[in-house]
Length: 280
Image (cartoon, rainbow, N blue to C red; front, side):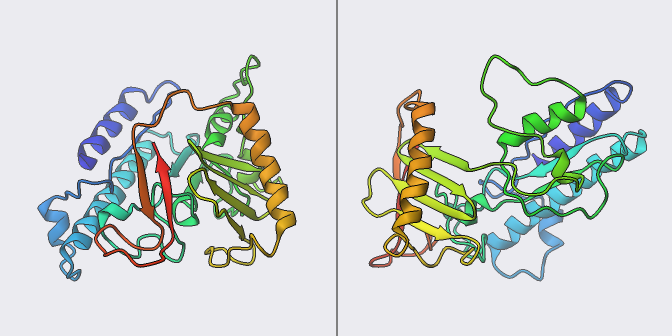
């Protein structure tokens, strides 16, 4: 599937080389089911674990596909003036059964720990963005829309609230500070806010929230709920304000699963382990 998507993307670039185009290339790799070509699998014979080797082979195909897409832009003279954004929707999933995918961060897909939210976000636009520019500002996928509109010189809609902002000033190294006062995530009753380097997670099925100082504790080891009630109240107020603006979810969850934070689904449960209730 990865090779197919890459080949079709290369064809689309060739077909649209003489006009502006937008391409959303959503690779499935390395999502399950874990499947790789024999050639990619055999190229990684130094990896002894079968599942890990298949997973790595999927990444190998992904790397090759992205390389082919970038090469197609270069071949058609589009490289300098094409904005390319590479990101991931989340970190690795516990149901894959491979420990360490999100190290050094905690958590798996379906939780909101940093192992999930701390995802790659790379931007390439040689004509406008200096190579090697690095920004540590906290961003989100909600910023992609405003960023792409800015790059294309298109005005944002004025008939609705737009949560995202253009990241071009940060990517070009001309902006300081943070693009957002706060960033929010929500899956039903499971709600999270990150602001000023602090992060609060609360789950409607659990009495104990999680409060972390990401500046000092980026891997979320020390829950400061009891130590910093001031920060707890501050971030809870931000969440309450956001929830008031959003209103309830538009449709009910069809599943609510218990997701362990620190082990894969292939590992046995551990007494007293951290977990979340995940509605979806």
